[in-house]
Structure formats: C-alpha cells, structure tokens
View 1 (tube, rainbow, N blue to C red):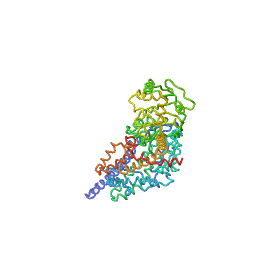
View 2: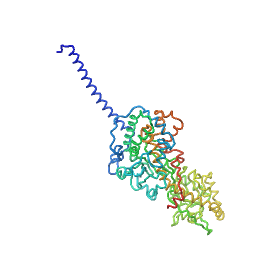
View 3: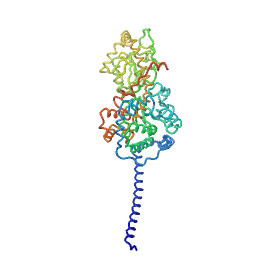
View 4: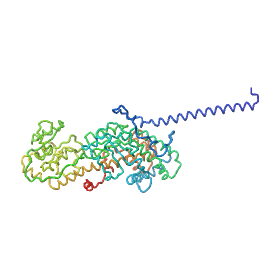
Length: 567
C-alpha cells in the first residue's frame, strides 16, 4: 500500500506514460497497415484491374507469360525503394511546370516545343538519351502476327529504310510476333514501343501488363513532386525530373496498340474501340482520312509504261464487268445498264464470259472498250485496286476507259478528270448507259473519245499519281508511324509530368476537361491552354477524327525522285 502522496502521484504518472506508449505504438502499426493497404489499392486501380487475360495454345494466360520488366527492373543502377505513400492535394510545382512547358519556343529549355525539337533532331526525351546497349533505337515497333508483313500484304515493312524518315532513330521488327519481344531480347536493347495488329483488332492488347509498371513510375513522380514543391527554379527542377524519370517512364510506358487495316471494315473497328471507355487501341492506320495515319490501298507497284497501239484495232466488247461479290444492288445496276448497251460479265455472278489465259488485265486490254470498276463499299476515301486496274490495260497497249463507281471524293486525289468516267457524275445508271451507248455503236467515235481522253498529258498525270500513291504507302506510312509513336509517347510523358493520372488506358476529352479544371489549368492563358489541348491531342486524341489527314503526322515531305533512284 502506497502511503506517501508523492509516491502515489509518481505511480499514477508512470501508469499513464506506459499506457500512452502502448496506445501510440498500436496507432503507428495501424497507420502503417492502412498506408500499405492504400498503396496496394492504388496499384489495383481500373487501369490494372481491366487487363484482359487470353489463353494461348499452350494454355498459358497472357498475364502469366514473362512481360517486359517493371519500372524497378528497367531503371538504371540500383532499384528504387518502394513508394508507400501517395501524396494528397495538388503540389504547387505543377502550375510552375505548366507555365514552363506550355510554349512552342524550341529555343527555351523545358518547353513543349523544345521537347519536340529534341525528339526530332537528337532522338532524346529532353536531354536524356538511352545508352545504345540499353535501347539501341528510341522507337521500336513490332507486329501481332508476322504474316502482316508478308510480301503480298505489307511487305515494304521488311525493307523499311529509316533514312527516309524525319524520325530516323526508329526500328521495325517485321519477321517475328511481338510477344517474342515482350518476353525476351531486352539484353539486345529491344524494348517495343508499339505493337501493330492487322485487319481485326482481336482485343489482345499485347503488353497491357506493362500498365502496372507505368503506374508505379507515376506514383514515384508524385512523390518527387511532393518532396520538391518548395523549390522555385522550375527549369532546374524540370531537368532534375527528366533525369530521374524520362528514360524510366519511356521504358515503363505500356506499348502502344495500333490497328493497320486497309479493308472496308477499318472504321467500324476503330470506332468500336473509341467508344469503349476501357478501350486500349491507341492509333489507327487505314485508307480513311479519319484514321491517325492515312495510308493508301496502293501498296503494290503497277506497270504503267504505256505502250502505243497504232494498229487501229478497237476492242469488240462495249462494257466489261468483273464481279464475284454478288451483291444484289450492284447486279441491279449492271442489269439496268445492260438493258441499254451490252455488258460482258466475268466473275462468279450471273451470266459469265470466260476470260483469256492472260488474265483480267490482258482481257481488258484485248477486248473491252470500257471497264466497269465497282468497289465493294461506297465510302469517302475507300479506293482500292479496282480503281487502279482501270489504268493497267494501257500498259499493255490496250484502249480501255474505266468507269469508276466507288469513293464519292475520288476527285480529291489528283487524277485528271479525263482519265476515267466517274459513275457519280450521272444521276442514274440509265443516264450513264445512254452516254456510253454511241461510243459502243461506233468504233470511230470511240477512237476519237479515247484519243481525246488518253492524251500524253493525261497519261503522264496517271503515272505520276499512281507512283506517288504507291510511294506514299511504302515509304511514308512507316515514316509517319515512327513520328507518331515518338510524339504520342513523348506527349503522354509530358502530361504525366503535369499531373495526369489516367483512369483507364486512354484519356477521353471529357476526362481531360475534368483534369484541367481540377488542376486549375483552366485559368491559364488562352495560348497556353491551346498548347495543353494539342499535347492531349497527340497523346490520346488522334485515334479517329475528321481532320486527321491534316495533322503533322500526315504532312510528310519526301523526295520521290531520290527514292526512285535508290530503287
């Protein structure tokens, strides 16, 4: 029993201190657990929760296969310590970065214009460059299926010469499946920045597991901002930020997924992905001006060394059609024309004539005054080999004039109006047939029409345009792809630097508008805000839109003469 009041007071104080220490120890443990749980939840945001799992032929899921290393493993030197806390609130440094970055002045270090200039001229992210042993080219892309680059399809990727490109620090891997490079070859300096899917976007999303590493680096960016927000020299801080994260994020960033499709279903495939909030198609290459990268259907070179035919021989058939896709609407047009002037039909539909041993083009050159070139689909920009085949009989000395029924805007492509007859210039098939009929009934009239239309100037125009469109595909498409991949990845890095945290794989305009308001960027000057939206456009906004053909990705100046000599 404690008799002294002093001893009693001392005992009570000691008990209080002991219980306080126990309480603080328990609270610290609890807080640590909550922080750990919050970090785990951050790693399981919708960005990583929605990675689709696909089982391959061996029964191994896509996620179970070896994927490119996470951000810790791909960094330089020792691995960074794990981030256990995500800062709350907005770091004051973000607005300072915005004021520095949002300028096109390439002479000032740290501006968006400066980053673009460095990417183009130095093949670097700001001042940061990869050692060649780590990544031998800044931009590297592969293919979901190696058959994509078969010589009969897009074989020009096999002989892609990057010296013709602005972004010459670019490398293509056309002979192996992209998954090969996601699981090995990092020791050779190969880290794919993009994967190309052909024809149908099978929703495989190769490399999506990389999104986890990308998010991990972004969390470390947040921590960096939180720890350095008291600094006032934004230029030096920006450079320090790049030294820490530019190369790490470039490698950690999930590979871009690109659809390459020159068939009629291209736009529907792209639109389907664009309308999906969780879609992971980043870029499109197709015949439409709406696609990220505008290509042409004209990827095989045609012989258009016109042979003069002075024999005076005129083909015996009036109109020839080659139709094997027996769409009723198309056959109805043929029947309506045939009711007025004869149509000789080849192919698998209805009454068929037998073409000669020389094949379709030789048959046209030998026997047909007019060739009815009908596309399977009538859409702006959808111009296939059917249009160009109308010129090929001229290379065999034939006297054939093409009647083209296809893209409504074919006149925008630079071919002289006299080089073909546009079906859409007539109100009805009957009106067209009545125009053709006199030339089929009189060889003299047809000879005069052919001479008038197919003069030397027209032939020269046809040769120039077909060569230009061919080269636009085999040279410009890969080059435009290199530029686009580089700018898209750079722009995403810049947006991450400005505090963007994507909810899913792509950031829609509505999400970006909300981000601008939350960060206070809506109070920026008009010109700065315009640049900010341009960065978003290059990063996320060009999957499909009406004026994509006017973007800098599709404005590619190439010397055709130089290329022809090289061949």
